[in-house]
Amino acid sequence: MPNSPFHPLHCPNISLPAEFTFPFHYIPHPLCLNAAQQVFDYVSNQQDFEHDFGIKHHVEGVNVGKMFGVLVVKNAEGSIGFFAAFSGKLAGTQSLPFFVPPIVNLTHEESFYRKKEQQLNEYNTLISKTENNENYLTLCKNLSKESETMNTELSAMRATLKTEKAKRDAMRAEAQKTLSPQEYAALWETLKRESLQQQYAYKQRRAQWLSKITELQAQVDRYNTHIQQLKTERREKSEALQQEIFSQYTFLNARGERKSLNEIFTGTAPAGAGECAAPKLLNYAYSHGYKPLAMAEFWWGQSPASEVRRHKLFYPACKSKCEPILGFMLQGLQVEKNPLLEELASQKTVKILYDDDDLVIINKPPGMLSVPGNVEAESAYSYLQKLYNGGIFVVHRLDMATSGILIFSKNAHTSRSLQEQFSERRVKKRYIALLQGIITEHEGKIDFPLRPDLDNRPQQILCYDYGKQAITSWKVVERGENTTKIHFYPHTGRTHQLRVHAAHKAGLNAPIVGDDLYGTKADRLYLHAEYIEFEHPISKKRVHFFCKAEF
Image (cartoon, rainbow, N blue to C red):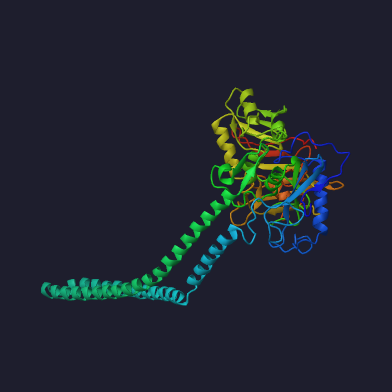
């Protein structure tokens, strides 16, 4: 059929997957790699659309890449092929040849969205016209100017009143010494009348000013009220449109059941929900009778300024938008188990490095939580709680994927002391990491702020507006063929700080080997907390501990 989004795959030597991809933690299936390569070739050579992914003409914050996805499927005749999709819009549209169509085409000229969007644009135009009305701007300018003049004049009058009062007080004090009681009483009455007259003049002038300012403010407020009313109406229509969009976005699952965004999300669905590649692909496959076999999503082009995205690398589905949707859409499919849960459930050896009456220091293996999480799995904390029959306090943490030195205290006093040392940055830490790529410089410092990616937790992004300061010093240990072993010295303790500082182009631009969030998955994350130094809370002596990495 012409312009069919079904693209055949000829891979006779590749076995079909036994289970569908777990979309939030996966290694791309060979069939998906084959399909992705066809998308690479198409995007590189196509003439169906014009879009600069920032590869040839990169302009910071303007030309950026796009997330694509492939879904390997089997049709009714048993043929194997794939569908491709892109997230959001591409080249200003939601629908392009080669790719599956959107679940709801909001960019179509006849769509309900276009008509409602025009209404919102009319509100924007009217608000802008009112805010820039010449009479309104003149009134605002006059109000500001007259208010400033009033404050200046009244302030000067109050200063004069204060000066005159001081003079009268001095005259009374002097007169009391030199005048008779009758003369003093007469002078006191004269000075009192003078005071009352000056105060009356001030009140009169103040009343005149307030009357003038009130009238100007009333004229300005009439415009402000109208503007606020327009903004309220625009917001209400925008919210109504968003709800209409949510009701239009309905999704199928493998059982043939259908739900809208409003039914899938317990609260308000995030903007853009349903526009990612994965929901588009699955919905099209279910709607047209194809059996999904495997999927993968990859980035094409330049990374956004704040995020870590690498050209042609594969990424898990996003959390905030896709996790609830895919949780419904995958029902009825035989899906791989979450490898993260299997890793958590596997037996891991905790090595005790130091143990006394006040603290215990361990070598946490990779793949073990520092403290209990949302899943039932043994953590370093729960392991020690059982080993010591309770009485263990958490002092600091390591990422689940990170191995190395982890400190726990055995009493509240020790816990408070150590936490104070961490917060006051009196604890010296050193990590060792293996980076993917060659770092040419010998040492340096990385300093840019981080905050959580609200659409894709637990990932962190660079953010100068709302991020928290994150500082890391580093020094090269040795260089391999295409890797660099490096020491990290964190001065702050932000979530994923070392991982983002390594991977982001504003940092070393070289992800840690095995970092499936900011780089490429491997047998483990090659990051290890190998050294720590602090003051022992009881002996008050500086102590240090070293634990060699297994890589």
